[in-house]
Amino acid sequence: MPSGPEIKEKAFAKVNLTLEIRGKRRDGYHNLISIMQTVDLFDEVNIYRADDLRVHCDDLNIPAESNLAIRAARLLREQAGVNDGAYIEINKNIPVSAGLGGGSSDAAAVLRGLNKLWDLRLSLSELTGLAAEVGSDEPFLVRGGTSLIQGRGETVTPLPSAKINQLLILSPLFKNSTAIQKTKTVFSGVTPSLFTRGDLTHKLAARIRGGGDVPAEFFFNQFGSIAETIFPGWETHRNQMLSFGAREVILCGAGPAMFTVPPTKELGTTWHLLLTSVHKKRAYLVKPTPAVQESR
Image (tube, rainbow, N blue to C red):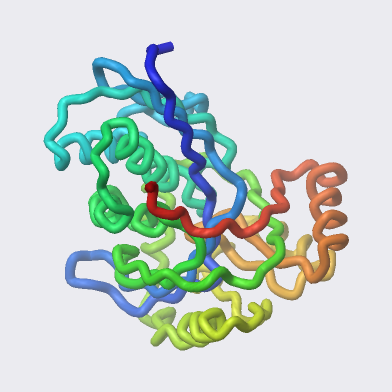
């Protein structure tokens, strides 16, 4: 293990409370509008001083060179004009390629951590701008919390914390694929008939700004309409959660993970135990997390 002071960052998972597709852009991306929320399921990102720049992930199924974290680290070093190194250790807890933003959050955490380690003193806004060059979820995940996301993900408008006590996430296992392949497959199933004006997202954003609660009927993910086609058997998992009494079960990002908001703490605990202990599935009972604050 390299010597030197260690920086510890938490890379929080995210869910999309809403996700609507407004249309396709000239650059090939789609214009999205979404309300994202980080939750307290997180990967651990530990950073040490080192002569060179390296990333080690405890999930050996993630090739080092394709890891978004190393891309973020190289970009930051290049843009900052420094030659410093770092040894970046990532301990995964967020399911890989599940729609929970794990890899993107790792990259965002690396930007925050290296900003401290290398004493670059960049603001979170500056890091957010860099993050947009790494991927679409990274700009939001630099800060996290609750935000309105537009464009391909590069336009982030912070919102007050959503009034949600807990969420129950189910991450079913499907045939392994990389996040890039999965996302391309999901977007290939998008047709103009799925495009919206983003009205539902705007309504929920207004409700959150006004300090109102967040009813389940406001949750929506346009990709949910094609989830069964992309992930055969997905509806079976969703129906199981509905059978518990969940009002809405919503796809997380591009999937295949899904979430619901249990009506009470007690039901959340019961449903989680049923999924994990009885049905032996990967499920997580989580709470929303606030946005990261500027370092002083």
